Image (cartoon, rainbow, N blue to C red):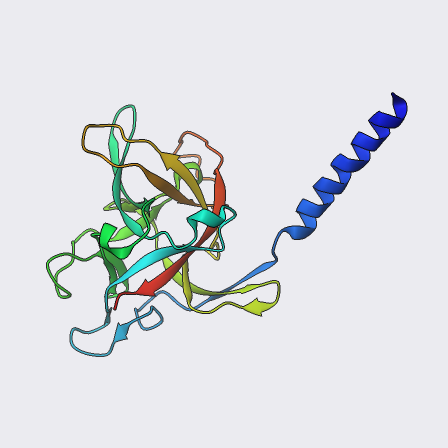
Length: 216
C-alpha cells in the first residue's frame, strides 16, 4: 500500500512538472497604439490613419480545435444588464462571420456599411480584470497591436492585447434567447485589479492568442 502511494505521488509529480515545463515562454513586443500604422492593412490615404477590414483569429490555443475560429459580435447576458462584446464564433469558415473591424484614428472600431463607415463608440477592454471583455462604448483599456516571441521564436503576424498582456481566456456561452447562437466569450487575462469595478470571477476553460488577420 505504501509503495502504491509513493508510486502515485511520483506519477503526479511527474505530470505536474511536465505541465510546468511545457508552458511556453512568451515575450510581447509593443508596436505602439497612438496611430493605426502598426495595425495590419494600414492605409496611408484616403481616409487618413485607417486600416483595411480585419478579424481576430484564435491561434496557439490550449484547445487545438479552437485554432482558426474568428471573431464576431455577441451579447453576454447578465443578471441586471446585457453586454455587447467582440467574442468568438464557434463555427469555422468566413461565411459564418458577418462583422469586420478596423483601426481608425488610432481607435479600434466595428465596421459597417462599407470601409468608410464605422460605429462611433470605440471598442475597449473592460477594466474589471475578472470581466475583461472587448466591449463597446465603455471606458476601458485601449486595445493595442503586438508582436510575439514564443520560446524565443518570433511568431508571424500581429496580435491583440493591452498593457503588455496578450493571453486571452475563453469560455463557452450557451444561447440565452430564441434565435441566438452559442459562442466563446473572450477576456484578456492578468489585467491589474480594479477594486472599483467588481465582477463575477470565472476561470477560463482554455487560453490562447488573438491574431489580427486582414480580410481579402
